[in-house]
Image 1 (cartoon, one colour):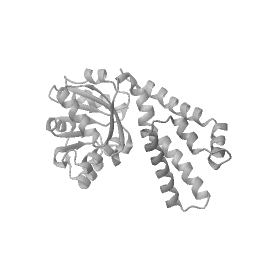
Image 2 (cartoon, one colour):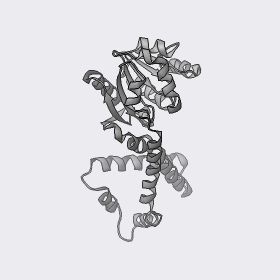
Image 3 (cartoon, helix red, strand yellow):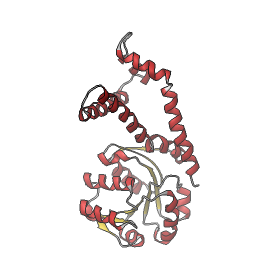
Image 4 (cartoon, one colour):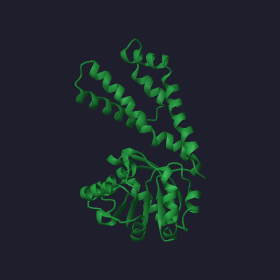
Length: 264
């Protein structure tokens, strides 16, 4: 199976790198096209992939094509290659807001898989929310490909704006929390390298515990707190700042923007 990338920006580039690093698809079977030739040149140097001269040439050479353009450029690009996207091709789109219905209208009967990824795919810990208008064989192939880069969840397409807010935008907010945690540790005298490791591993360990525990998140939090202890003092500060409410508002803002970007 040959896989092509139209657009190799941050997210598409992370997926391409993850695929190459896990050998999910061999480099000689991966093609890339980007109007910024320097990007594809660097990818070829790093991973040994093939460079296509045009989007049309890339689609002709590949069985599946991942569309990784900015939302404002994606529809124009699809219009230009509509005749190439025939029934024997599969379009995998990671474009925010571009619906399956709109992609169907801009193609010539190709199979479509819509994906909301996130950047931890680069280290094999991504979350991929997918919706399909595809046959079982290609759907299974795409799911299998993405499972090598992280966790795959299949949801109705109407939930994609929510998925965009939670998993797509979520890492940025986690990084902000880690930034604050690291700065706090450095302020207490811990060297920055150790502070970063402590923050990241604490968050990673707590996440694994939360995912695998039968306890509620509230109960897990209470398990760390002792009356008159250190943890409860910090919890009081977060409660006074209405931290949980602030977090919900943060994701709600991202969700509202995702709704605005949705193109039916």
